[in-house]
Length: 417
Image (tube, rainbow, N blue to C red; front, side):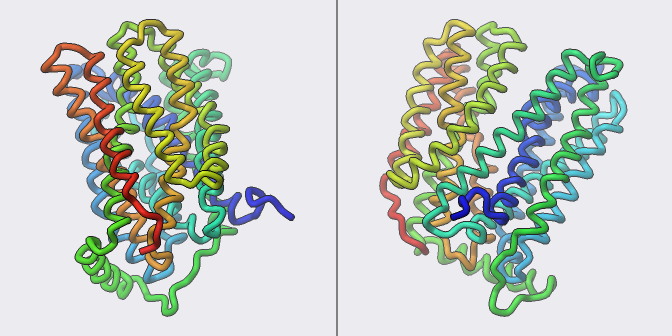
């Protein structure tokens, strides 16, 4: 019997994670923030460039968060999730490639390209998540979801490793300097993302609605259906409760991801060590995500998520006592052990709660909550740091989000809306 992982639709679906994760790792988390400040905003005050970067991320996040549920509802009624994924991917790939040609000091063009690439990335993620219900049956949701995240961490990590080596030793690649290496990395990410999207477009077939609608009719029907869902969402108690729990604990996860390097810098750790820790997390997360898929099938997805939340809760206290780079590396390994697991099991557990015929719309809400995550955490950290003058107490304050999310999750019953 052929392994689930080797079935053409499943492998093709998971390869999309392998491809688009390069944008999340190399561009979003790795090079763009630094390159934007030092190259495209060259000569600008540090506070000005920080404001610009914050505005870019905020506008892009808000745009896709507000669009995702409506686009999902449209896709459900028109049977066009694969087509819309392709459309957003083309947008993301083209804008990411465009960063290669943006000249030094042209921060506005870099901002526009990056914002549009981010919209393309998150739009593609929304429809890829909803296609999970088309490639996996209920029994294999945890395993297949974990498989996608695992390949995502590995694919993003492999290309990021190559890109980091390019920037450290550009002459080995025939490049003039590190800046040329970073610019070429943006082009490589675009090609990588495009190539690994092709299998999904060829081999993943979504379940069609009984009466597929044209684009105009799908827009109208999607808008009406979204309104109905919003009004009746209170009656979908497990979905509502899960989304609230997810928002809290994934906010904590997102804050750890976004603030870990900043926290390391505040403790005086070298930048090179922090980049190495980021790479360690990527490669540890690959087998760990697969392991959590196995764990979810045997103990239940909710139990697996609660285990991961418990580990994150403990990490926030460990971070308070952190003193050495070696401990930071060890913490990166532990984060890698649960990061992919909490994300993949959240996706598959949610997939069991939502109506299959409304997968696009409901995963739009799921990704909307994900986009609004990492808002409470940074605000909480900033307030605690300002009040106590301690970055250690600030990082420990994130434990509140994990505790609240975990408690709420305990009350979510696994029943389809």
